[in-house]
Each structure stands twice: as structure tokens, then as C-alpha cells.
Length: 204
Image (cartoon, rainbow, N blue to C red):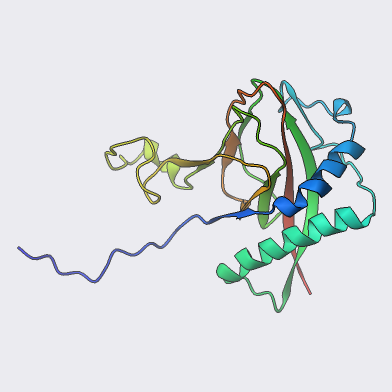
């Protein structure tokens, strides 16, 4: 029997942009040098430090502007791919926070609110560094509807429950802020350093 149909279409993909922005490492190093992370303990980062929720004001200097403006350029490319109206809307850098994950530090599953894009820039990659895991937006329905029986935990990019990315120094990841994600347990003996941020959209 021949089954006649046009195609199997993918209507609801989750897009994650991955790029090499290693030229920003010197700027990131300077930001960490200017920030005393030991003052920023957070219950979400056991065995680590984060300036999240700390309202840290970074110096109004060229290096900071360069870091933020370059991130905006990457986000602009993703916005174009996703059809965001950039003629009447403008992407603006929102909050930014520095993270230092020590051994056995992890960050539980979460999403980011009040922003259009979120992302992380990885400053280093010690041996055993934790991966970041992105969860499928339909994963929550697996408890109600049986998913396809997969040969592996990940399956393919449409039916997988999650996907993981291994950081390297200078790696930049961008995603829509509604994408649920978490940071797996860090097994490195050295701190894993990263800078995370949110991007807002405002009318021009």
C-alpha cells in the first residue's frame, strides 16, 4: 500500500543559537576581576556564587558597553530568523549577572520572565565542567500522553525530552526566555565561570 501525503511539517521548533564569541573573553575576565563574588552567595547556587538578585551596577565603561552591544548583535540575528519586527521594536540589554560554579554546584530547572531572549556566555571550561540542559516545551505533557518509544534518552530534536550543550571558553548560547533550562552538577575541581543575561524588547 502506498501512503500519499505531502510532508511531515515541524510547526513548533525550539531554536537555540550557539556561537563562538571568544573575542569577548578578555572583557569577561575584566568583569570578574572587578567583582568580589564572595559577597554574592545565593541559595540557588550552593557551592557557588552569582550576582543574580544582587542588583550589581557595573561601571559605565567601554568594555561593558562592548560586551553588551555585541550580545545585542547576536540576538538581533536570532530575532531576524524568528521574524521579530525590528522596524518598530528595539532589542535592549536588560539585566546581567556573573556566575561561579564550584564543585557539586548545580542550578535547578527554571525559565526567565519579563524578557524576550536569555543567554549565557562561557568564560572558561575546566575539565568536568557541567553542561546546560534545555527541556522540550512539550515535556510537561509526557505525563498525560505517551511519548514515542525512543531508542535513547534524547531521541531526535522533535521528540526528545531535553538536549544538552557542553560549554567551551567563548561559547555563547541564546534562546527564547520561555525555554526551560537547568545547569547540571559541576564535577570540575575548578570554578566554572559564566555570564548570563536577559534581553528586553521595547517600541522604538
